[in-house]
Image 1 (tube, helix red, strand yellow):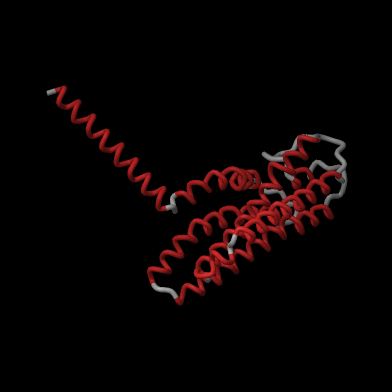
Image 2 (cartoon, one colour; image 1 turned 120 degrees about the horizontal axis):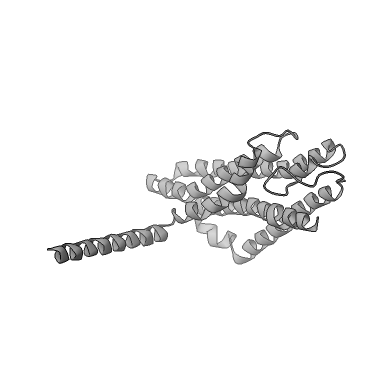
Length: 229
């Protein structure tokens, strides 16, 4: 049971909630950078960044603690095997020896509301960003959209499965485990790829690496041809 709480508290809900808050902070950072570029260094100073980071940690700890408290109230008197890949709260409700309707509502109000409210905040921030782009030049719009594209992709890939999982009644679908694998493993694995491919320095380094590799292969082929001749 201690291992279950550890996985539920630290491995999933704490860091999952932390990712939600980090995505919100990143959207605020992009809003300031695009809409108020001359005041960016004043608004996003070290003190503000530190406060935002502390708020993200505190909010994640509060969210995960609520999940653990809900699990502690569940009585388990039968099988201790869940049909899922992770020890999440909703799979645990299925093996609890009590009526879990009210607890499921609390989970929806906690995790579901967190996902929905955060997603709405992100959508609103990008509405302001897109509205501000109407006053910029074509080159400025292209640069701003290029900066935001990677963040928008990550937001969609992360929030759509989470909203599907945590904002519905306790109904089991065959696709639940596939969705859980996607937002717990797939999205974190795609994050480095999505963000690095939007970075000009990384793309230039990859082009240089590919060119060097191609030149090396061409040199080897020429030497092989000379040896054969």
